[in-house]
Length: 357
Image 1: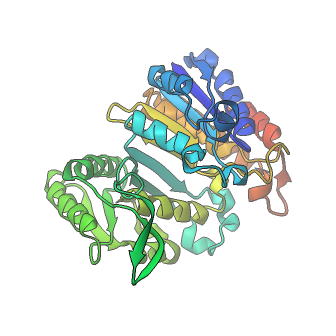
Image 2: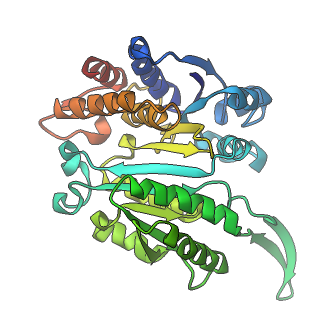
């Protein structure tokens, strides 16, 4: 198991430290991994001037899986576009063809009160959001900001291009249908076909795929309605599948149903299940270096790594059950703390998970 470790920016290095301690604790149980560290994001810009240095690209190619902390922060917001930390992340996804992002949104019973919604609306929530990662408006050409003559005035003009090929849509559709087969047998495809031709094609291709999966029920929803339904009645969903931009927004929204984005892992996979694993949350520069960040999402992302890339389901379950046990014991970082529970820091949470393995 060769793992390329990318601590990144902000709280990234702190949460990665605890996750590697958990992996180390499992070493005796068939988890024989080799970790190699590399720079990405803002840390890479500071050291090399590039968000994705060549050395990191090479290591990413050679590794079996990648483990990422977080990238970005206000420090780099004013940098030129080609030095934005997020480009490091987008570059790895593109280079490795990590086209499928899987984000589970699971509400642990112990955290029902941490959600901003009423417990009866979110209790027992278990959604999987499947997001296409390598196409859509984020990568479409042409794009840019130009000076143009409009209405007799010279003014700045911004433009981007949304596009998908049917093979890209079919590929991500299959991931969603296959996932639904192992879950509750329902796929909801999210689009905006009433105004966007690209997403009309998306809906058409999903309908063409559906007969190949007679055991899975396919439904469709416009993205604005899906955003409302996630807040109003989230338990109606099993697997949601959508494009890059809509998936970016909906997966963050779904994560907040669970009470803390600090609880949610994420897997980005290629066609052979090589993947990059990371927490859903950002780099949280406001709390970086204070030892208070929640490492559980990153630890749970390693469980996903064991399940999807290394096919070690028993190890994945061990990690997930350890996290459940720690929550049941009442340990909480600040983001999920409530009166009557025990507030702990990043390292103490790591200690608790290792003890519960």
